[in-house]
Length: 335
Image 1 (cartoon, rainbow, N blue to C red):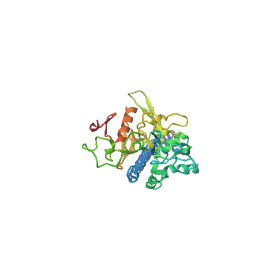
Image 2 (cartoon, one colour):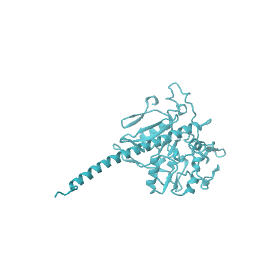
Image 3 (cartoon, helix red, strand yellow):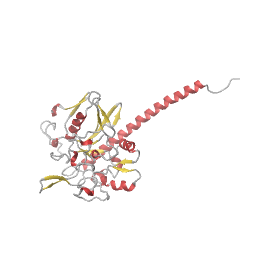
Image 4 (cartoon, rainbow, N blue to C red):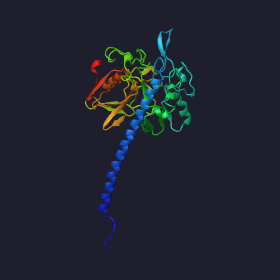
């Protein structure tokens, strides 16, 4: 009498087929999730750029705190007031102050499950907007998620062992009343010079050439194959001046030193835009411009840190660049 059922070989074949199908489905699901996160991040950046654009009065919102001058000493000092993000006060209440002890440098992260701490640090967002209190927060419809890239949330969870959450993921071009020795940027998209805005100061660059927001690197970035090894460190779960909401592309460290008396390593030599996202088999950086259009910039295979610092400066100052193979270079009109 013939026995019914499957042989061992048949079961192994079935399991193998199921494993292959599962791997294919999971791969497609992972790609779909990655595309969704990329789209979410780009949508957030467009919203921030449009909100930033709509909040301007006679001048743009500041990237960092306002500057005042000590007339007796003749030196410039930083006054702790809101930029596009506010400063975090341990009390949770914001009042303009000249005393650094009244403020933390920025409330980047908060402990998971600590609602009181989250509420205090939320003041960084809802008091953003220079002299126009809550301007950006209102433009973002009071949505904290509009300030967050989903990949950043995952990166901080991983780096902190699930104990911390980020408050924001984006940094504003430090050229907006933060980087020293520059004229504050005005909206002069129509007041370009005889080369259609390709020459002259960033003050005369059209809106579609001046980068508004970017991300910093969220996980370590290894560079490069044909140059001495280098690693661009991530904005870690531990406090970092690099994630203060300001893209300090000149590397002046913004005049701040950590509590331990050490300069932040990520500001040494100039911060770079973050190549955090994956499209196909390439790492890309998300950036958005003053006219609200966003771009994905591919990381060259043989990228070098100085090359990426140059690119970041060109984007911040509204200079044209061309990507040729494994290099970024200035557009010929800006040489």
